[in-house]
Image 1 (tube, rainbow, N blue to C red):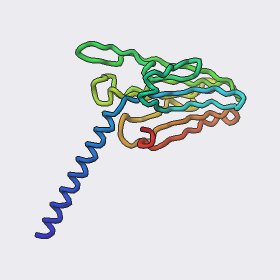
Image 2 (image 1 turned 90 degrees about the horizontal axis):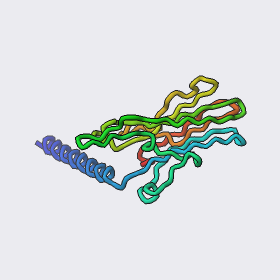
Image 3 (image 1 turned 90 degrees about the vertical axis):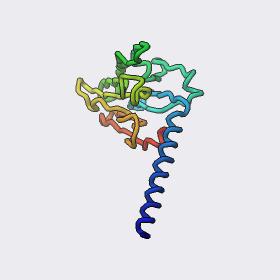
Image 4 (image 1 turned 180 degrees about the vertical axis):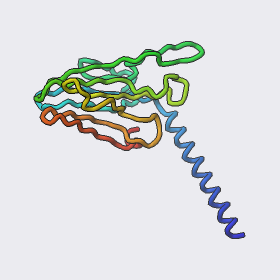
Length: 181
């Protein structure tokens, strides 16, 4: 009898914990909109290429001026959206291709959107990230790599990519998802 009572109490605690976590996550996802920002910087003097992946908050992001001259990009600017009344879908994607000459030669960096769902009304439809490819001498030294693998979950997120001209090494910095969002 006592064991049965303990099991009921533990089951209720687990249920309450589950409900609390789901309410918290619903509140987090219903928060202010976030604006992804990818930066590209070619620095021949330092012999490096740097890509960064970050988020702008709703105050700064709504008025932020993304610019190819400044090397700042939004993945939303790399998709074409068809906004019909019955559905809203991503119908086309674009790529940004940048070339940088470092001490060991010419590197090409391709930045493209990481689309989680082409249906913007579906699961993950309102989420987008970016992906990159690093090419040297016609060979991909880093194949297409998303900054973010999934639109939710606990997978780490890439926040910085550094290409070193002297060695050709591509160094990636990842952080936990909860620290990014």
